[in-house]
Image (cartoon, rainbow, N blue to C red):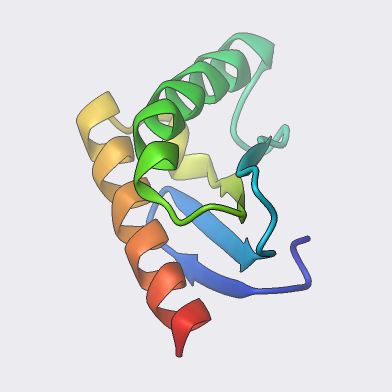
Length: 98
């Protein structure tokens, strides 16, 4: 999935988006050890999951999104992470439609 579709990077995350045309949309997360220890990685994953719960309903049907958290995601506030992910999704969606 990360090799297909469009990619957009921000300070805290890289968003990969592919439009498959299926009826279902899906999201996946990649949070490596570079982000931090297990507690930090789990907190970042929970935040990303909460952000995508709101963002996924806005995307066209059949969108597949993978979000790769970068080390700066550990220190970012929820609002900053949400803004970065939303901006990355908008840019990746524009690239996918082009």
